[in-house]
Image (cartoon, rainbow, N blue to C red; front, top):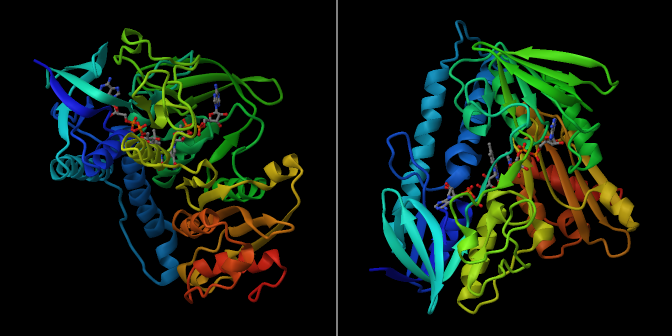
Length: 475
Ligand code: FAD
Ligand code: NAI
């Protein structure tokens, strides 16, 4: 006997669980299937984000930042410490507790919103009258029928052809989040978001970290000025970078990893490290979904093909998050999940791809929304730019963290904000004001005329908006 639902969501990451909750709020009878298991084999909804992504990485970034403050910066405040030690096992256990709190929170939300949760793998069986049959295999063993199906099966780490992940020496994001002791030497392949965040965690705790990047430059997606400032700051902290490398081989022993590569000059060289994190991007994940059973179309990358409204090639089958085109970000997945649930309800769900913020949680933090200066130049758009350094912000001085700046880009004629780029303390929080401003099509002058609390880092945002009109007050 099958169980019938208005909406069956396959995948319980930020795309899937949020879609399920929103659909339930809209009055639908909803099921969510997720196969992630915790160490005891129990359900661990929340996907990559909760289990091996956003949440655990931020927990480790927080712990390692506390350690770095204690080791390097407490002295500036007159606080002296002796016998400072890092208990890595405790830090990792704390991270696991934070993850579990989030898993439990999602199970609670499912109950609260009357979403039926099935722990197991969901696979398409066939199209039937009024929907699609989905087989759940695992702890739950059920046949479900969904009038609508939302595919939210996420992504998986991309491997180097020369080195499969063993999570002991060659680590994906999963292994990188549970290294049992601080490596003496750590290699990171890829200077993208994971490489910088995880490289920072282990560098702060004392590892000698070398990042090998294939491209000749740093953080191509960020504004050039931000990338330059971030590279300078991260390098000063001790992260070593090599750009323009071509990895030719990886050899692993019980205790070490040797990476063979040619450097930017074309010279063959090697790097020997205790462990190697490979963070060279992620690929859409559809293993076990059996898209072929119903003719669900995938592209050459393995992503589910969708239109701008997340409709697949099949009627009433939708797909959201990392498994479809667009940036692989939890908040993008969530927005798509909400929009799809609302479209199923006949509403006009909408995702504005032009105002999705990016944040990299290094120190300094890096955050941006909208266009970079190099994009505006290549589009031939007339723009004005204004920047304000945290060095001239009273709160940043009091914090003891004056690295970086806020930069505004605005249309030369209308003054509409086209992009905001921040490198510096709490950029992850400051960027929200810029997102709101851009959503409301604000001008730089709008921000410049809003009263910002003093002393606060947000005054740097106001001052950068003033800088667009060349009238900063404190610089
Ligand atoms: P996922 O979160 O991948 O969830 C998919 C779920 O579906 C998983 O639980 C999976 O097991 C399950 N599943 C797959 N197939 C099936 C099936 N057939 N049946 C049942 N279940 C199935 N993004 C940010 O915005 N901010 C960050 O700070 C951030 N940090 C990150 C740090 C790291 C180390 C990594 C790896 C990623 C990070 N991301 C971050 C990216 C973010 O995690 C993803 O964009 C987000 O998780 C995508 O959500 P999703 O719902 O599409 O997929
Ligand atoms: P990424 O796309 O951010 O960076 C990958 C880097 O690896 C690029 O710089 C690329 O040029 C380089 N690279 C690719 N192949 C290479 C090779 N063979 N040798 C050397 N370098 C190579 O991917 P990453 O860091 O794996 O993260 C995946 C995704 O997860 C991100 O794109 C992001 O969407 C998400 N994420 C988001 C975070 C956040 O929002 N704070 C944090 C971590 C991940």
